[in-house]
Image (cartoon, rainbow over all chains, first blue to last red; front, side):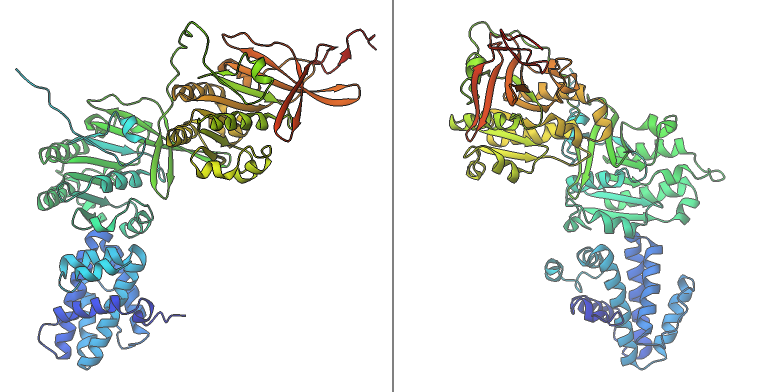
Length: 150
Length: 488
């Protein structure tokens, strides 16, 4: 039985690897916790904004709230109010992450984004999710990876 | 000198629908897909989109309220036509939330135009358009008619073929969309007892001749499929002078009674009670054809094909015939069939193997397999189906079960004797304390035939026609008496 709080356990390392590359791209060169937090918020905003055009912004918002809930099982300090408004949510996420060590913040960010991708992939299929992500992160979602997805 | 504009017709991607549309969807037309919830509107829109979207002809699918896009994408992926490889290169999705719609039609129009200008689509879908028509007009904003006219004009000038999807019914026909639209495809569905009957109607399609009326629609994992309504058969042609070409039944005795077999291109109905050997006679007809190089199709509505093969007379229908492409067995027994769908299946099988002979076993089973609404006009549908089958160039044998009635001479169930050229009537009769079978050719259009009643047996190789019943009378009323014997 898979562990619902460990997104990497369910679908191998594939989605996890894409999430890691996406976050790495947004983190820029600031390796502090604040840098990680800023990169995570930027990646999350882009993700919700771009995929929201297709699956609906409310749908993306609901998936993000659920992902926060799942991530909190491993990182209980990720306590931002999931029901806060658009800006409020990102501010809360930033505040939680930047208060941790860079390593802890990075792990939690990866877990959170992987949950979002995994949930979305479970609903509309990894292939479609990766194709949509490739519009924003073409290098991070390589063609080879997309074609290999069943 | 002017030349007429040639309108390109886009394929709908829905088998059967292009015929109903009059050849396809006119390029750059402004269309409405209307129907009730669950009627297949979004699926139809997607099927059209996936059939046509390409790098040269990109598509934009605008979702407005209605079904959450997350769910719509999840469920639409279950259809075989959904190809993720076309997203996002050839197909762009855009979701307009309720907030934007609440701002008024002008904002919605602006947003759609903005996206059209950004992506340059040649196909635009707006689903569900109905959500916008229910909104009050914003202060100083445009009303629905203005919105539709401007949208239509803009998209046509951008050379886009457009489809508005919405829940509309007959009461909405005064809606400006109905006036502006070049084409209207209406989907209908109706629950009847335990079956759902779906139909499609092309209400209008400017510039081309669609097939009027309601056509059967099915939705499966492959998507939508339309079965165009069968046309009324052509008036019967005068039979050519001279002897008729004939096909042997493969039943010695019966072929002689028919005057040398069934005339080619005729339809025959074998009518009789249960166990009288209708199926055996029909399979002998097909087997005889195969032996003479004429492939055959048997449409089974009762037994499963494997059971059918095992119950056929010894060696009459071996499985190898199917493998060799000389015989095709069709098993059609869902309880919501339509005659149009049955016809489509039969025609496809006939064309696949180049069949010259076709058996429908039985009409009673076919009637049971039809959805209740189709049973209501079974006689008329059968008339159209037989006409269409004969136009394929096959000779048709149908079986029909008839409950014995000794107080009247019935030639067929359903009052359908008029639609066949030949009727062979099989009956049981008690003769001197023994149950015996006899048959008679009750009808033979345009040809001399044996009118005598003949006893017959069912042997291991099929029907064995015996002596004429000339020594008895009263068989048809179930009171056989040897001629010359005093009656009771």
